Image 1: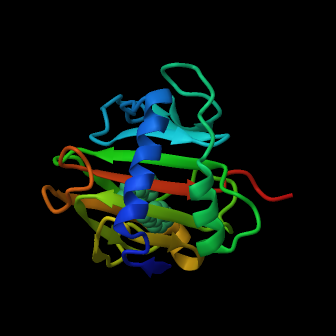
Image 2 (image 1 turned 180 degrees about the horizontal axis):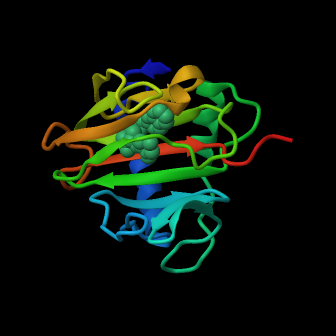
Image 3 (image 1 turned 90 degrees about the horizontal axis):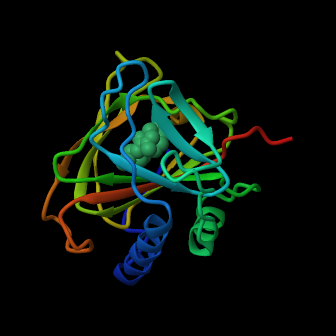
Length: 197
Ligand code: MD3
Ligand code: FE
């Protein structure tokens, strides 16, 4: 993994927030629910790109349309495609950009991202808004974990060994950033989903 602290300056973060507002106006944040039990996530989500990640009673998956509106996801903004090229150097563009919105009390339990077919491609994460405590472990749930504070403008590139590592968000620190209109945090993760031919 590669950690690029405050890669995006204040101005770039503001531009990106404007782009995200336009995206969620077209593809509103929805509340995913846990497979089988239907318990709602505390994180609200949306996506842009040809595919988007969703979760509901029938499971986790990528799909081309919004689960509530039925509309195709809006395209990934050019600025994010450029950021992917600059930082990952990966030859193919991301197919999905998951937008996670954390209100101050939201969290994301330890999990592995393995709904993609292609684990060779990196995942690029962009943090915006309030600080968060991010925990990265190993390939097994019981492996030791390391905590990081993710701040607004930070990038994380997950590749190699860490691509299939357990990770989660333990806590948001409300009021640590003034970027968003309200306390909370946005995280973007750009991903390849299908296997390169
Ligand atoms: C480590 N998001 O959307 S981003 C997720 O801050 C997710 O919203 C968190 O975990 C967030 O799935 C963490 C950093 C991140 C993203 C993907 C990873 C770390 C990862 C994939 C593998 C290992
Ligand atoms: Fe994840």
